[in-house]
Structures are given as structure tokens and as C-alpha cells.
Picture 1 (cartoon, rainbow, N blue to C red):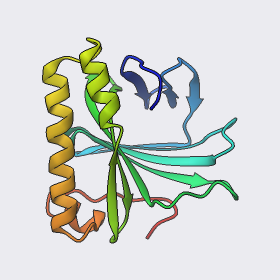
Picture 2: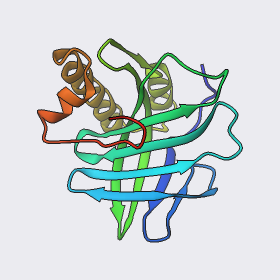
Picture 3: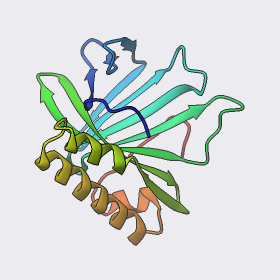
Picture 4: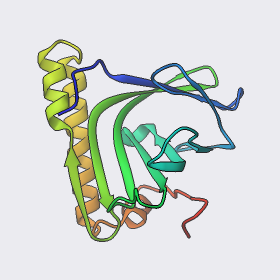
Length: 172
């Protein structure tokens, strides 16, 4: 289990073309794209051995951040997409995402695995997350699992039923 920490907050600033990570480090973004359902970003990940690039979609209505990590040779993982449960709010042109610990590891069209529920419960017990946010995180997770399972773990098929189309640089 990871050490106890407050929820991680990340800022997405299309006007400044930066992504500010939870440690306050400004990361240059190659592409931001805003759609009615959410915000896309694509950027390199300097200093990361495990992966060298990432693409993400923030979809506030679903309470999810969908990420495709471009893993470096020797660090590949058995996953296609990583879904973070988040609360997203707007501050002018900036999008602010609060990570609520729970994640879903998706092997597209095959399976999924929910992880880090223990971190959410521990954070709630320590007073770092309200009961409302903990309930939101669990309900968001259940809705995503149910939606994906009902569509054979096919991300595109599930999202199509919600009029959401995610586009990716390296995926058709």
C-alpha cells in the first residue's frame, strides 16, 4: 500500500499550454483539445523511466480521467488504458482535477481491475477525504465498471452509448 497522502491535485491550463503536476512542476503540453464532453492533452514525460509519453482525457461528467501511457521498452504493463477517478472543476480556462485514489486498469475488450480502494478508505478514515467524496469515488467506480462490463470491456463501445468519442494519437 502507498503511504497515506492527501488527494493529488493536477492543473490543466490550455491557455498556458502546461500541465501542473501534483508536486507543482509545470510540464509543457504538445496538444490540448477541448470537446463538449471533456479535455484532451498529449505530452512527453521527461524524467520518467517507465513511460515516455502520455495522452489523457478528462471527462468531468463521468468523473474519470482516461490515460494511455506510452511505456518504455522493458517497462510495458498489461494494460491499454488507466482510468483515474477524479473530481474536475473549472477555474476560468484552467481545469483542475482532484484524484480520488481509486483507479481502473483496463485491458480493452478483455478485462478490468479496480485498484487503490484501500487508499481511498484509509484517506477517508484519516479525514483527508470527506464521506461525500468517498461515496462519489465509489459510485463513479461502480458506474464505470458496470458500463465497461455491459459492453465487453470495450471502452469505445461503452463511451459511444454516452455520445463520447475519445481520439488518440497512436490508436485508431
